[in-house]
Length: 239
Image 1 (tube, rainbow, N blue to C red):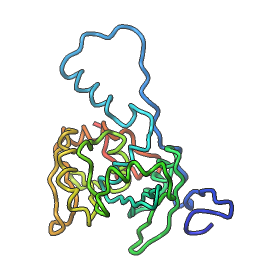
Image 2: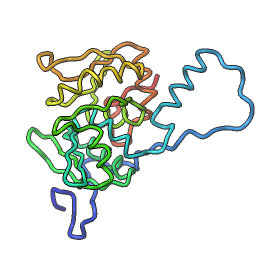
Image 3: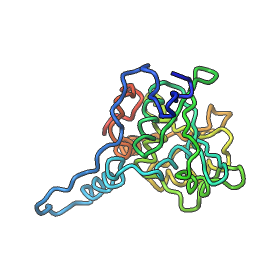
């Protein structure tokens, strides 16, 4: 196998079995059950809202990859095509992201980089051009005015660059060169009920720190169950 992840046939190969290969990490949509519903309380409504916007509430689509761009992901254009890439710090993240990209019809390659990190990237494809057009201002990455965070977008962000911070916080890492993104990404987090504290480079960031029992419970609800390849301690525990 080549480091690029492609054999002589040009078809994408999975990353090496550093961990057991995960199942396709595309949670099935929530199924509706028949029969009348009992009268709801405000707490019930809040619970249904979490599930509705959660990672398990919709089929995976290419637009979900905006979650990677909210973090350290990068997108570049070439003619009428674009390519998305992201560097991650653990092999399990490679497995999860390759599976998530495949669930959206995108083949991905990977290769080791400096500092025991791994670069995951797609090939250039027209499918990603709308994402690049929305996020690139010249060569600068910046979220569009309509950007918002769904459960699936948060799931991808967390899979690429989310880490627990004991005893009761979770960090969502940002792109080091994407200062223009940091503030609007924070606004989107707050709109999703996940208002966090921005940690700048001098504070060990850039990252948003999510704290508080309710916010962490909401994060866990939105991103869904952990991928099979993820270590148990790497994912928000269920509320």
